[in-house]
Image (cartoon, rainbow over all chains, first blue to last red; front, top):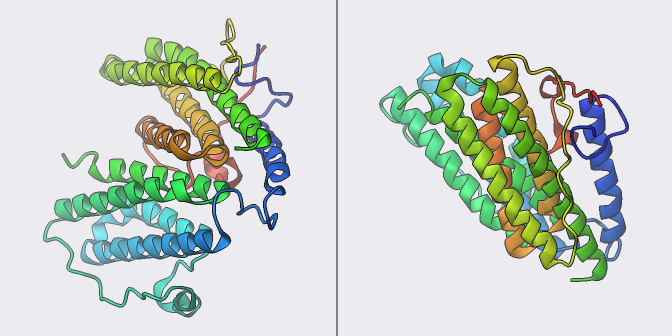
Length: 179
Length: 157
């Protein structure tokens, strides 16, 4: 028997894509039962989902700003933090936000009534503390998202769960080796 | 919950269960190949997947389904002759598990969704431990970067 649920194609990535599209097809059939067929109607009102997205984008962008502040203070951490910061920027975009603070602020400001106008708070005085603080920030955001995903439609919940998992993985990478 | 929603959730639960069966088998292989220093970690992961598997069996029964059973044997996605490939296999297993749990998050609601999200999170952290680096969207194959899709999986049976 083949290793995972019986695949009909030989390559891993392609097989995964096929599995996903099969699941996606079942889903879109289910979603059309909702009121607007948008795929966001399964577990809450569209406005709830929209607000959750805006908030998630804002949180992720705030997190990239924390990474930037730490990177500004400790440029030597660039190799270690660069990939994590990049992932958080992708998260921001996945939630519909703009990743870059200054250049893209206008579009997000219109969607978010509470601009995080405060300049970056102080960065801890040692590299080690700065990493620990980033890890704690990642972890607490992941925890918040684990709760938020219970109240939103399925597709957004799936994205939130993935991003929360990424945050937990980041927290691990940020603390590993500094203990 | 409509009948269709229940059916969707059951399908996702069964897929998760199948992946956990495979993970339990796979970690049996991993445990035999990793260096001594990582055996505890492999054993902990093995135990975690067994516990998730058993919980999923109960969940499927709760929805009046018949839990899918494990295969007698599984073809590994690539040869696993040494500790490096064993770690890659472990990461691969966690990626697969993450994928089915993200789908279960979408299909489920309430407590079951929360549990699935927790399982996804654990799988993502274990994957990072084995791989040494993270992916941007654990469990979301459609968003996988080319670099993380480079591990090819070829069934041998």
